[in-house]
Length: 142
Image (tube, rainbow, N blue to C red; front, side, top):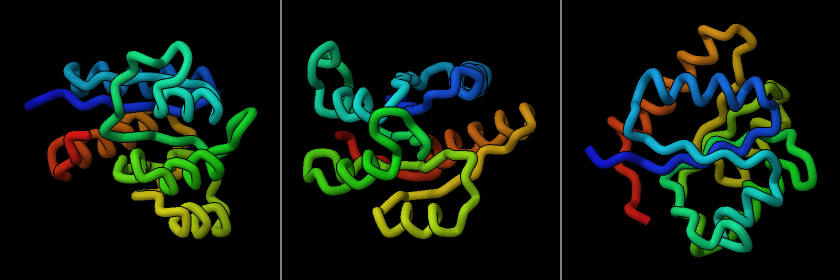
């Protein structure tokens, strides 16, 4: 099985660390790239500046509450860009607000997952997302 490129857009260092640990323990072959705000996410996806050699991700894990450009704006821009719109986006956020859930799906998020506070549950959620998108779902080659 070919490894998939995953872009994590997350500004919380603790959540970044837990996500990295979940990926390392679970699927060694997948490559996790991390950016900490919405502006960097779009630069990575568009291969601008320092990201000219960045791979196009097969999956994006997107937090909503980000500095500089929030996740809702990133979601809207990615899904509105014909070159990027095919990339599945899983919103992975602390918000359980119904308006965030509804808006994310209206902006064409592929899934909305509330981050568990508990470390073990967080690891399990990331593993399940990884399992689903790596072993169950057929992703576009890019």
